[in-house]
Length: 611
Ligand SMILES: Nc1ncnc2c1ncn2[C@@H]1O[C@H](COP(=O)(O)OP(=O)(O)OP(=O)(O)O)[C@@H](O)[C@H]1O
Image (cartoon, rainbow, N blue to C red):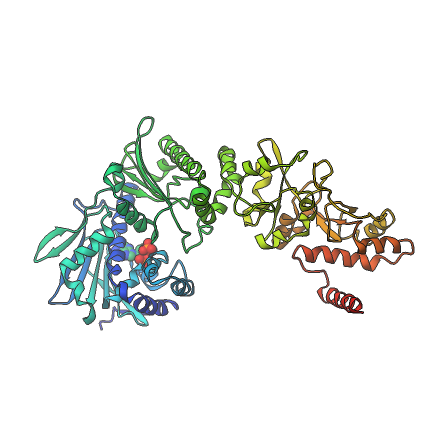
């Protein structure tokens, strides 16, 4: 080994990951080619874009990814004139795992069925390592576009890799795979061509297989989105969709159209039929790809608002110059027009599909929470989005819409009521619902994180105000039908001031309520300001201070309150006051202020009850 060769350990997780990739995906080994060709084509696209913006020398005429199998040497070489990698980039990109750890990957691998496994490689950004499924040694020689030196990275896929100075005339990357004895099938040009056809046909950079000095195109490279709809089969759409987003199912919706007029573009968009393994919530920006006259420009043009970031696809326009710069992408009215058109088209598709409740539910369960973000942050589309929302409800099974809720509202009911919290199961059992149930008034049950936020922004639907039932006092007396709370109400006029006094540090008000039936107490939020769920979120974020104190509501028809009201004459309700507050907290899924003391008291009471 020459002195210039540096030996490096892999980042801590790489070794284990390599092992996982090589063994778990053995039967899908052919995807190594898809991954390496996709990386090479990406590198060409990236160089093209950097050249436009002045950073890198232009991509040479006739740029292509070349695959060169050599039976005698038992190697496969992939060569691309792309952006290349500097020494530091090689160490970073090929020696560590940037995006996600081994644990997340192996967990997903364990959960996924065999058919789904190949797509995980792409989703976790570990495609390069799939080379070791077929190679016992991998050498990567690369020269960064704009750089002077070339470096060679080499590894046998065990604990370490080496980096050494190398030579390469032009910018780009060569990857040499020393094929394992059990993977010789991949030295056959025919086998390679079949794999490219299957996995990489849509790659717009030409992919050539080189044999005996002759080059043969392996991919069709037609831009699928520019073909007329009638010429594209469902399978081609599905393949392209799978290739784009590393999916393995069928898209829930395929939108393929050509816009002509004020702005000219082709678009092919997919709404996935499944949630990606990487939570959508993590990534905020739309990754729809922008092409100009077929050529890939960027996937960071924000072609859709972030609340539609689950949509994948391509928009290809004639109306931008090929040398569009980053600054221009931000300011050009052409893109603003495309954005508007594309957003509206997706919304109209959702509206149409929402007419079939079962079909729409499949979409809603995957991406509903993301769509709700739009109600919160996008004033322009808020109204449209409100009609697309779906909810669990205290009155009906399955999903329901705001329009359906309004159609079921009772005579005299003024508002759309909702309750938000952590899980649908806990919400359905909440004592907050008792009075509403007794009067037959429906309440929408919301359990996504974003639900604490958007209802306030929407404010109303079809002129009916939207109200959280944990906020302020709720007056249900004007609603027709349902008798509400039964039984005699105790006189709590003496009890209330005593409770207020005992709890003055902890609640802003204590009052009688008729919204309870079986429970003795319940907490509510003050009329103005955040509702209870929001208060809890604020508290957890360490911002409870601004949230204000809750209101304690007591049920004068409950035996416990009746007995305390009688005791109020003689005093001694301070201790009971704390207990009532704890009781209300526990009902909402919070901890009592002193859990041990609370538990002791409940045990004593239970024992007394046993006689
Ligand atoms: N031929 C290449 N030319 C330039 N850079 C490359 C090349 N191949 C790989 N890289 C770099 O190495 C990184 C790691 O590649 P890998 O396939 O493991 O993950 P990824 O490409 O980030 O993920 P995904 O394949 O899911 O998009 C790439 O992001 C890229 O920066």
